[in-house]
Length: 473
Image 1: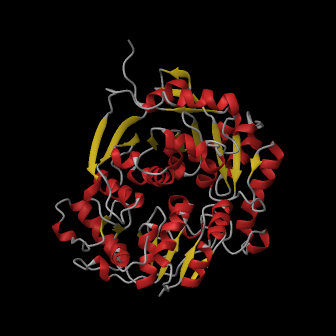
Image 2 (image 1 turned 30 degrees about the vertical axis):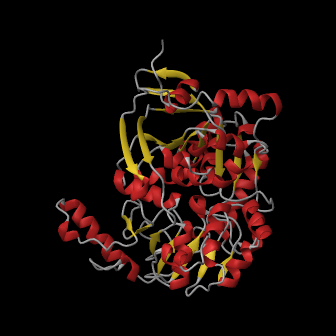
Image 3 (image 1 turned 180 degrees about the horizontal axis):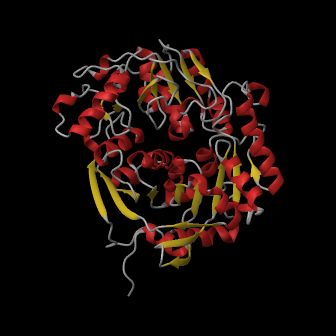
């Protein structure tokens, strides 16, 4: 009788081509390679310089997301020549090699990590790679997915990747979330517990009643931010919600192939008794709406907390890092997080740019006005269309938000959507690094309802206060 295996081990074993005892690496077959405008030109340059060809173009997909403008859907809306060149590079290279591209003139275009699941390109049990670190998102559907940086050229040429074995960490979130607590709050609480680099070298499998109760879109949010605690990839076991989400998607199997696929996917969850290298458990009921105060996603606290004092930190390196973060963020120890004013609000990104995110934010905003400039950018053209069909765009616009076109936008600011130095932004994005939203910009990570609440009050706010006033669903 075989030993119980984790989901990660099952996917790894199914894709093993050969092992190299000398290096300790395994050559893995890759099911999907995703390309973005921000890095793929390097891979294509290598391909051309080495005289290589694309091994399996039908399994490669391109999406221009980092440089795409939020102000329009044509290249004329891109006012920077270098950004325009990167978008044109991806289009030209995809056309040359016969690779499907969801370009700016395609209504399906959006953020790579929104488009992949949305189109059924991401499937349980597959290996999905992309140059972008937030490829971990796709693990919400039971795919082993991670960013590969400069290795895209090798994958383009061989459809394989050399990889050292990874360790496994199971994070169980047990119990039931309270009202007003979103998947974003759960993953910020997880990252705070694990630490900014605490899952380095691991694949993180999320489990427990709270995760099982989440929608697929909520699971995409928690897997998306796995990289923020150092995890190589995140995983959630596929279940009936997963199958219902995928059925009928354009690139998902059809007919008899669908039935065969679902039968195989039901075998993917970790076996009872499977051993993980580490395990962590959290109580969902103890998690409150979260907000970050520093420059890593691990610098998160419940909204009713206060800015921490470095003087109370015994570790000198950590103490110094906290002081640097407070200096950059312009915060004083002991300040109530509720008293921190914001200059801008951003709702979007591959973390929180899906239709459920927009619905949750709009529920808070309905009938209210933003006190600060605010931008909402749907995660894809299809999300944007669905939101407009439901009238969410009108709620955002009437509240004073700018209604943008799909793309990464102000999450990373590579398309020019940034805030000024010293300005403070409540953002649904995934990173609050120094300069992430522009030189000198200060980012507080929050959930979509919390971002909407901050827009309404002009400060970091507990969305539950607004819910008690009857404005939020």
